[in-house]
Image (cartoon, rainbow, N blue to C red; front, top):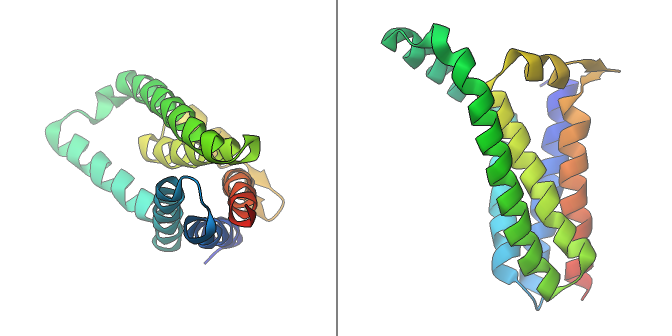
Length: 165
């Protein structure tokens, strides 16, 4: 396991554990916290076993077999835009639900979760320009590691606040 994976795995695991705690202790929106627990548990497994890479390779192989690999560049920006829109809608819906149950910090969990989903999806879509940014070295890791940690950290802080109420 490389340092980038260690950062991402650690951040997602902590977020999953704190969301599980919030789901048990929070009087408001336990279902939303349970959903976030599941999301971050899946992201932890994803990072540990490189599931995004396996999915991307399977999609590339399928496109090559179908003879569509060369035309993927026209579709990738549309997929990224759609993914961004879905992530924003998810953030809005989850944020509203958590805000009603707690407060602004809890609402920010929606943004963190949407960011995590967008990052995972962007890696699968693998537009070369986006990859060039996400995989740029930042010290001993690549840029996606602090982005994963920031998104998961926002969710973890919100879960801590929710569990204390």
